[in-house]
Amino acid sequence: MNFLGTHILSIDQFDTQDVEALFAVADQMQPYAQRKLKTRVLEGAILGSLFFEPSTRTRISFGCAFNLLGGQVRETTEIKASALAKGESLYDTARVISGYSDIIAMRHPMAGSVEEFSKASRVPVINAGDGAAEHPSQALLDLYTIKKELNISGEIDGLNIALVGDLKNGRTVHSLCKLLKLYKNISFTLISPIELKMPEEIIEELRKAGHQINETEDMQTGLHDKHTIYLTRIQEERFSSQQEANIYRGRFRLNQSTYTTHCQPNTVIMHPLPRDSRAEANELDNDLNQHPNLAIFRQADNGVLIRMALFALTLGVEKELHNTSSDVNWYTDRRF
Ligand code: CP
Image (cartoon, rainbow, N blue to C red; front, side):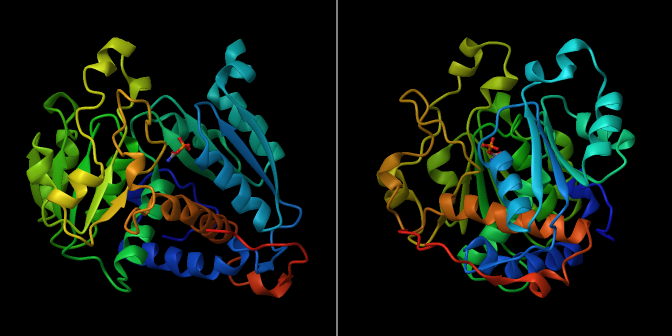
């Protein structure tokens, strides 16, 4: 793909070369994300940040990524705080906001909404999550994290991964499956309540690409021999009622005891976050917080690198980063 000026809407747009090109640029972002250097390569540029659905890390990390490249961010959050609440169309919103911005990151509760918006936008649009459909930048940061955690420099062929939780409504696992599909001989163990299983069309795509699929409701046996376990929250916002979501909450939980009993000692633990830490859910227990294989916060940190790389490639400044770089002049040590 030619990233320049391109909307990033779905993992379906990517091939393995695109992924490697993106990851190479993400690696170059490390000194900026770690506040060892600063760059002004996007000085004067504006990100339009439109989050019509709740977000902590995607919204803030897109904003930080743009700021770290020297650009500025203008944002709106929630449908009710925008003119969409007054009946404005996505078309009109896109025409207007793309007049104010150089690039837009957008999240919206309806599947397909970001693509619809992008058709009216005069600047590139990055899908920051559209309903239960896709979350492409999350999948890219997830794969980047898997490679870093497992210390794999080349292809991740032969990966043995378990995806756990609400696989029907979780857009992160949909995009991650589409991304892993690009590689060879991936073994997917899909652990979910039968009612929340991975959509059949995604499973079919994986099978057609030659990958091995094991669907199960038995978490304990499903965790055996995995390089990586990727847990997800019950996506309560996609259910018709809290009561319906409650049926599934807490069904699959990973804690220190389960991990020690059923996982290999080096299995990497991932979660796109937020994890649901309420007692009735608690799919990833706090008693693993100090575990060295718990990658969730490194995973979230990697979101900044990936989003900086997406901005740099889409706006065509990936080769100019270091032209404007200089030392930072504030205290930058991070405790852990
Ligand atoms: N992983 C993720 O999308 O988190 P937020 O909902 O906080 O953005």
